[in-house]
Amino acid sequence: MARRPRRTHSPKLKAKVALAAIVGDKTIAELAVLHDVHPNQITEWKRQLVDRAADVFGGEPNTPPVDLKVLHAKIGQLALENDFLESALCKAGLLSAGK
Image (cartoon, rainbow, N blue to C red; front, side, top):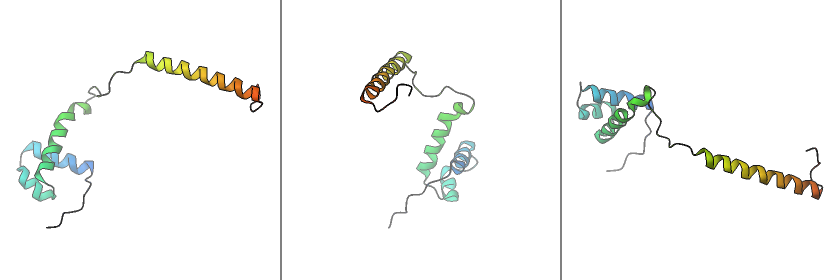
């Protein structure tokens, strides 16, 4: 039996099917036949919806905290490099002193 080409499903369809699976009016097998999707895929969408439901209501994002000291150090380093390169280009006559 030949494999079906990979399909991409819209977020709207994923949400619709996952919500239907959570509601439980139909079994996952029935939803799979109805929407022509593998039952394991429906189970995965259902899990993702449950895991990320708090984000809809302003839950905390899963981004790690930013270390401002590292970023400020990088800004300082880049500023020094820009000043050095500007003076070197001015000395070489490739850049005017007034920019």
